[in-house]
Amino acid sequence: MEDIIGHQSANPSIKGSSKAVLVTGGAGYVGSHTCKLLAKNGYLPVTVDRHFREGLVSFGPNYNLNLPQEVNRLDEIIKRYNITSCIHFAGSTSVPESVANPSLYYKNNLIVTISLLDKLIECGVKTFVYSSSAATYGDPGTKLMMEQVCKDYKTAYGLSSVGLRYFNAAGADPEGDVGELREKETHIVPLAIAAAKQGNTFKIFGDKYPTDDGTCVRDYVHVMDLADAHIKALNYSSYEKVAEVFNLGSGEPASNKQLVDAVQKHAGTMKVEMHDNRPGDPAYLVADITKVKEILDWSPTQSSIDNVVSTAVQWYNKTHRKEIQ
Image (cartoon, rainbow, N blue to C red; front, side, top):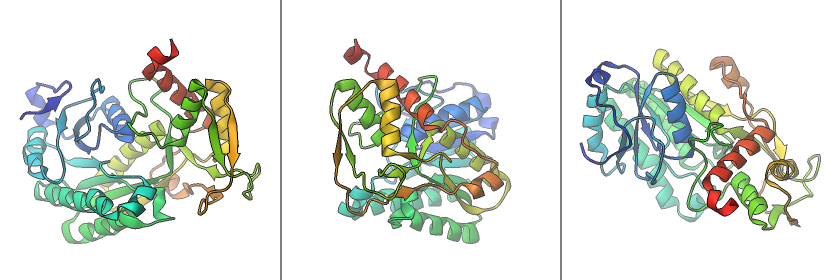
């Protein structure tokens, strides 16, 4: 099979392993951190992604593959590694873009996933963990549709699935192997760090909200905590026939001002401009993680705003060495 990137194991005994996991979108932010933790826990992550970057750290076999056009290539990959489960990260995540271009989002998040599910079932893979989104609460869209699809697929085809609705993924691998890196940055933590490091002005939208300090309060959950939740969800759906969904959050909400304070502590001072509230921005958006604590025995251990920011700053320093020197 061509288009293999990274270090693929040549050990033929791998075919006998029942711990090979197909990871779609495993070259992305949360996906790459999950692949690292899968490998640490004795799994073999087999990644398929259409966005491999130069210098990407690999934790198992990697394949350049564009779903759903190349979905039939999965037959050989699944057979080759005796894959019995799948963690699905591939998809689009920007809510504003989903409103501006719904066709793209239906294709990327619904049609692609259904095509993948049909192929998995055809190949006998019936354990499925997928990333959903906290955006289901504000703008249901395709993520909420996928939750219904998985329920229907459990009834009709015996698919066991867990959807993970996570809030604001943030932070980076403390060991510095992987982190948040994209061509067009939209996430507040790396944007604030870049502003501090580059001497730019950082804008806060709104200080008149009904919160303690007047700025929006959000839930920043560390990416390694998310990775841990995906592995717990994988174990759970492997042994229980379910179609479950869980919220993942930090348990420690932070306001925009608190976030800026943490960034300035670890990345240096910056000029901050206060702007008017943005229409439609909720004052308080925080996860209720009671259910995931009870059923998956998962609790965030790395998601304090200080740790989120400090690990993100470490990653920024690593990826911007020339700039910092």
